Image 1 (cartoon, rainbow over the protein chains, first blue to last red):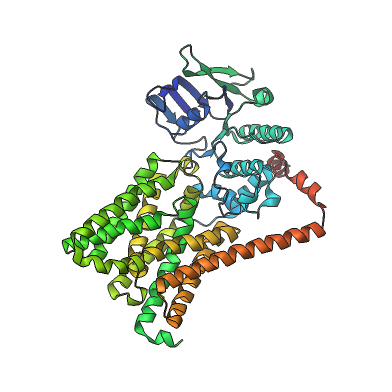
Image 2: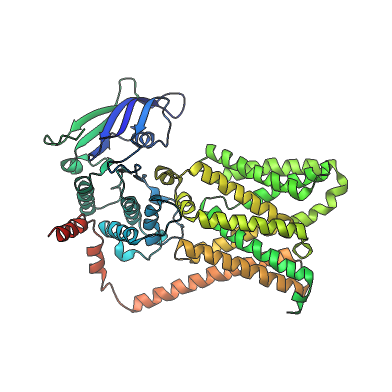
Length: 235
Length: 305
């Protein structure tokens, strides 16, 4: 099933386009890395994909429903989201639980499943023992983890992460890759991740989307390299 | 409690309580959205509406109300072009509001005098219309904050992730601005420009420092606001000081004491931990602080077997 499709997308911030010829598709169950040097508009590509930016030309489409047939749920972890709002007065538990709010109405009572998913997400990122702490007291790496936990608690069809491993030590990074791979394999979730550490993560990936520079200096997408020969996504 | 025998004091305590509760809850959101000065700005903008109302011989309270809401909506749109600097939008609209207020007031010298009551408020001279307007706005605001508490939490933390998780952030943010405008406009003739902004900023500033959770920060902010207003009113009756300024000063004192107490508590905790245990459970924490994709796998195995 095709979750994201971008077709001949052009986008720029001022009068010159910074991204051109962007055509790609992402199917459900894939673990995809987006890579490219600094300034290659990787974040812009993600934001276009999520509909946070409108392309100048071309078409971006997100599947309206996930594989389960329910409304598509997107867990987005922006780059350095944790760096701002340091004084936000919220406990970690409250913050990760807010990932559950997007399921169903805004007023429904949270049930046992909601609490179980919150607990599981916090345990998966190794932050359960700190759940009553304030989010402002955490280190950068820990904040990154709880943002990931909030996205996981959403039970998302599509996880979009912008350089999630910045500030993590090596053990944590590999643990994180394992976790993301398990998400795609066990639940058929789709993971799209911007990363610079391609050499580390490539054994886990299904596909790499690379942004490369054209002769005239603009960035274009994409060479896609399939990483695992045996992988053939279900259409 | 002899002061409560007076009709005007009863009304003052009631109006004060309503404003204290909604304004200090609103303050928490405004502060976290980097719009702490929004209330200050809106009250100045609403002054332009009041001046225009007086000039055109319309009801100034109602024109002030309408202009404050228009100002709040304007801020919302200006804010979108200065995404990372929310406070700029506040400054821009404030310049527009205040300058037009001054010009309209100069056109009509005769009403100039009554403006001091708008600047400093007249909580002990609150009339029935103002009280009813305040009551209606408080009920509406309370409904908004209670019903929308989850989307508001998500939007206040980060608008992008709120959008991607499917919230209509555009409308929610606009509604929030309109509610802000309504609260400020209804509160201003009662407590004045000075007190509106101090009620929005000061209790929230302290609550955010002290509270351990979001829900607690709102509850604490409302408590500080209410405590400040009632003790301020009582003090102003006792010592015959102007009520608005007394309340504002008491709120400021509460803030300073609160921050001082928090610092002292931190110091004490530091001293205790230096003397006491030394990283006995650090090993356990490090063990727990790992990513694990195994949690679910183990559970699955159990349910299958």
